[in-house]
Amino acid sequence: MSTFRVHEEPLQQEWLDAYGHLNEAYYLVPFSNATWKLQDRFGIGTAYFEETGCALYTLETHLRYVGEVRAPATLSIEAAILGVDSKRLQIGHTMWSADQECATFECMLLHYDTRQQRATAFPEVVHKSLLDAVLSPAPEWAGRAVRQLCGAVAG
Image 1 (cartoon, helix red, strand yellow):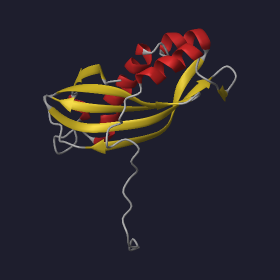
Image 2 (tube, one colour):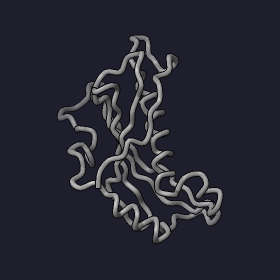
Image 3 (tube, helix red, strand yellow):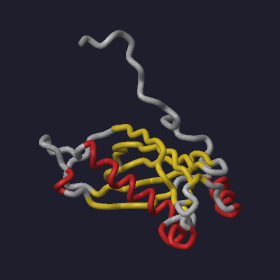
């Protein structure tokens, strides 16, 4: 499958750090907003939650800072389904400002029944739709961890 342009929003002045860059904490805001839009695209957003009590909970994230973001800017998020099993969904987002790639975001989500307070399988139709949308091959940055440095840290 391919990627989806799912979200766009202007850079907010209050998101800037003392250097005039997008503060690292605020990269997550547009990525999170894009995740909601991606969930809606597959019928597992807020309306789904209200009807079923099932939600997607974030288990893990990995954020890479690739390029500088300065105001003024419009942030555009491209999303991809990277993998899915019966209860988990792996997604990836790429943030763009104009034609510059600024950051990537990857997360693992868990399909969770809030009424039963336990993980539960996706409905079959949703699972199939997500499987059909898996991006192959995955981007080179998907599945990476933070690089480990050798040597002891001085204390």
